Image (cartoon, rainbow, N blue to C red; front, top):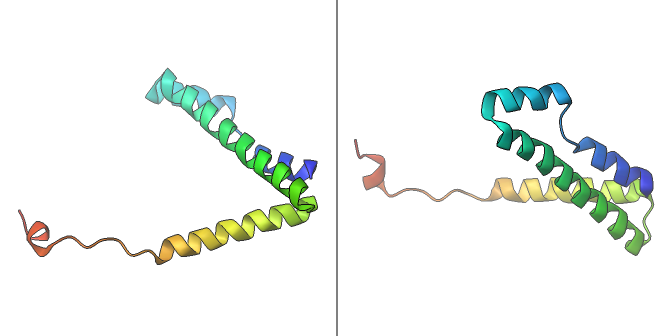
Length: 95
């Protein structure tokens, strides 16, 4: 279970130092902090869910990762089936 949580965390870990310096130079220091903090927090959350959820359900690391991947695939398929709202014809023809 530890290895599965670590793999997920490392997959979502922030980008390398060169990328962060480029983000800082191009977009500013606040965006660099965001590019560092967001994937780190996201990685911790997913690793926590994998480790805690798998431990509570008595799953092995492989079973926990497969459960996560299958649930994400199902969510993506269901999200793809949602049709966007259509705009009224008067808004589409406005110049």
